Each structure stands twice: as structure tokens, then as C-alpha cells.
Amino acid sequence: MSVKVLRPEKDFVLIPYVKEGTAKAIIWPGMGAKYGVMNYFVMKPGGENVPHKHDDSEDMFYIAQGQGVVADLDNNIEHPIEAGCFVYVEPGTMHAAKSYGPDDYISIGGPTPPDPEMFKELLKK
Image 1 (cartoon, helix red, strand yellow):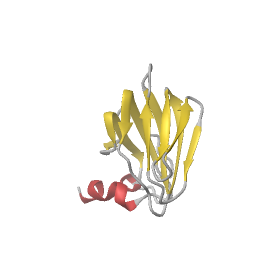
Image 2 (spheres, helix red, strand yellow; image 1 turned 90 degrees about the horizontal axis):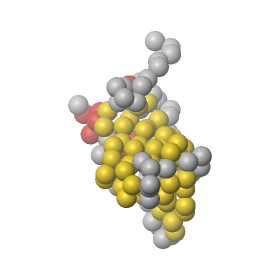
Image 3 (cartoon, helix red, strand yellow; image 1 turned 90 degrees about the vertical axis):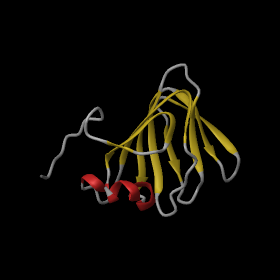
Image 4 (cartoon, one colour; image 1 turned 180 degrees about the vertical axis):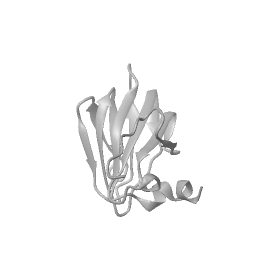
């Protein structure tokens, strides 16, 4: 099939990257994607994702709802983010996003090219 339409409420696998919320892989190697990833993160106010890095991938995501910070943990810097912001993280940078509410935080995007470490456990299933 050359075109796929996917819905985040049903076409996903959970990835263990969020405390106080969910992280869903929507477009990822396990569904056929070779060159890009689209994850759907939802965090409750006060939630955060697991600190992580992508050694050979750029992480790019769009903040669709909410506010918080994205932390550059290598340089101990927190960058404020809110709905409408795009975030770019260089390969190899340890980072994490945190939601400050009052609304749920939703971001869409992921590492490009796909980070094999992010999906290695899912691809074993």
C-alpha cells in the first residue's frame, strides 16, 4: 500500500518514554517507515518524559497543546515551550520534556532517521 492513514487512538504501539502520560509510536519502523518517525506524546500537568538521547538521529517535534520546558541535560539548560513551538535536538544530546500545565501537553514528532535503540524492544515482538 502506498498511502496509509493512521489514527493515534487506534494505530499505535506504546513506547516507555513518559511518566504521567502516554507515548505512542504511530509512524515507525514496525509499521513500515524507513526514514522517519511520528510519535504522539501526551503528558499530564507535572508529567515528563524519560531523559534520553538519540546517538545518530535528530529529534524533532511540534508542541500541539500545553506548555512546559525541554531540558538540554548535557548543558543544564531548560528551554520554555508552549503550543505552536517546534523543537530540534541535535544527535547525541541528552534531553527530556516536562509539562507544567494547566492543560495536558501533546507533542508530535520523533527521531529522524529512526533511532534503533528507541524501538529495539518493540521490534522483537
